[in-house]
Amino acid sequence: MARVVVDVMLKPEILDPQGQAVANALPRLGVVDVASVRIGKRIEIEFEGAADLERAREIADKLLANPVIEDFTMRIEERPKVEEQ
Amino acid sequence: MTARIGVVTFPGSLDDRDAARAVHLAGAAAIPLWHADAELYGVDAVILPGGFSYGDYLRAGAIARFSAVMESIVRAAGDGLPVLGICNGFQVLCEAHLLPGALTRNQHLHFRNRDQGLRIENNATAWTVGYSPRQEIVIPVKNGEGCYMADARTLDELEAEGRVVARYIRGNPNGSLHDIAAISNAAGNVVGIMPHPEHAVEVLTGPSIDGLSIFTSVLAHLGARV
Image (tube, rainbow over all chains, first blue to last red; front, top):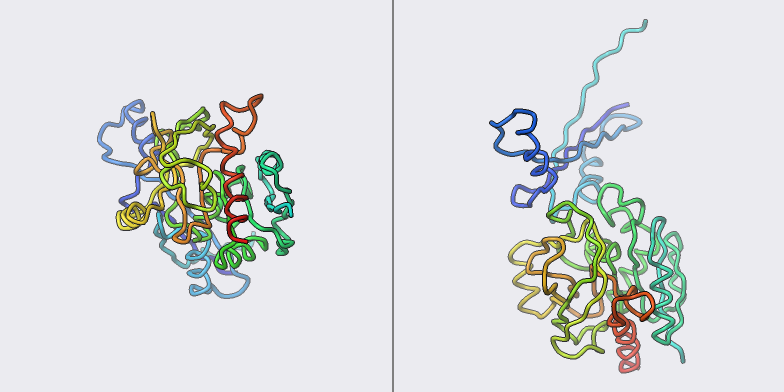
């Protein structure tokens, strides 16, 4: 199994009210040096065989992200070998 | 012959029954359509109702776009079938690229539920011919993701071509650009509206009966075309 991770973010010019709400809450934690917070989605796609970046790109482009308001980036995630106990 | 207006039910649709009732009150037959059934049963027009199709998972309307019935609707809309998307239905129409732009989280993050003033800006579409020019109406708005967004070029195009069908007046409930409450495609047969005309068709339950003209409009449109 191979995993492709897709990160979907609102385009920089699109207002992110959720991120703003989080940023506005930070002073209550005593944090006053954060300029901005943006919230996106992380999607993990597990392929049965090898990671297929082209297929993942198609999935991201057609379904995971709406190109009108969002951008996405993808990467293959190498998983650390788990030692048998 | 009585016109047949299809009302689609997706998993998570809420307002399909109200939309069917509005169709009935307007004098047409409401034909239930099912998301997993590509058959449109020869309907004369289609309504995509409000609600939370597929739980609004991923993005509102994003998964509904790939349902079997939507493939048929996209094809038929290209041939001129009148299609109305209300609230979640508007979101589905944008996701399906039948309408430009996108609907995003309300700017103030609150779900907004109230009676809302609108001005009909274009009474030449299939769904608004029954209104007088610049008529002001009051119908309920209830959405969490109703903030209409599009790039400047798309907005200029919509404005220049008269495709802003209705605008919020006396307060914008969600932060929509240009106070946009409803838009149409270039041909005027596909309209998306964020507030709910189907909740304003009877004195008993609505703030007005201003919404009824949406449903009688399409009947007038269909009648004129025959």
